[in-house]
Amino acid sequence: MIVLKIIFWVFLFIIVYTYVGYGILLFAIIKIRRLFNIGKKEKMNLDYEPEVTLFIAAYNEKDYVAAKMKNSLELDYPKEKLNIIWVTDGSDDGTPDLLQNYPNTTVHHLEERNGKIGAMNRGMQYVKTPIVIFSDANTNLGKESIRRIVNLFSNPQVGCVSGEKRIINKETDVASGAGEGIYWKYESTLKKWDAELYSVVGAAGELFAIRTNLYQHVEKDTLLDDFIISLRVAQQGYTIQYDPEAYAVETASANVKEELKRKIRISAGGIQSIVRLRSLLNVFKYGTLSFQYISHRVLRWSLTPLCLVLLIPILTVIAIDEGIFSFGLYAVLFWLQLLFYVSALLGWFLENRETRVKILFVPYYFFIMNLSVVLGFFRYMKKSQSVNWERAKRAS
Image (cartoon, rainbow, N blue to C red; front, side):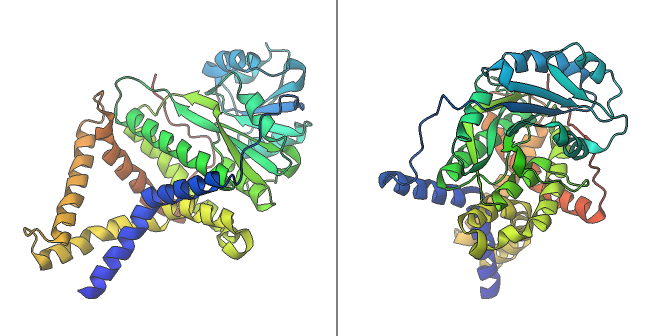
């Protein structure tokens, strides 16, 4: 039983560290650095205005073209220095034709559908500016987003900048909206601290930018193009920075089924990324970046969900041995674990009912998030995840 207890505490430590402990440790390190004025942020350089390209890879996005172009043309950046490129591989709903109505926009269309990464690889040959900014067709950008992103590139050590993904916050919401919104708020906080410590570990595909000359051709079966592209920039010795005021806004997934579909794809891509970026696990070579990468990403996509699954039978056996109705430590932990999963079950029961008490959906969303990793692992092993666009349906 002593061996089982040791395994239990090791697994529990990994779980707590992954979801809470890393954030606490990061916050403590940041506070100490601030106390000694280490890594103090530079002021904005408002005179830095290089020519940039807004790059939008799209597949059948006719419903978003008008809103996206209106938003893009209203961005606070010199119009003569903002180039807009759409790459519409495989679109057959009239998206390329609609874009012809905008003379200040370049459209590169290909009848064949090769997935988003295929469109990005092909489209990059047309980018002639020093900085390229990637954005999704169904997201609107904050008015100052381009300016704020570009400003961070005034530091030559910065090779990539990630914007913030914001989920439209409603007063009442269903499980998918409430869970995704809370998750991204927490992620945003971690990214700010990651950037302040050294580098963000992966950019959000809704809005991120890189130095054009640092772009590396990405394998055509890549699932997480934004993650791979940004971290390969970091592998070249540059940092990935983050500005939460440079943001892309979109609605949450229409329901938990759609969110699960999106998360499974991300999880399969996460495992694929761990394999392809395995050199980043070498802390002796990449130091702080490896520490951040393992703590913030690798554990979530690999070991931690397995620990959560194994913890259920392990704790049950220990609690029964101790006396499941006693007030012993393991018995209490057993009932707390049971309470958590009952709460997740309650979240499932209420998933399509709007409520102001959004915290009710946190256990359910946490469960869905880890379930997606398990399902994503099997999908990756079977090589059954398509690289073609599979955008989750979004709430209205």
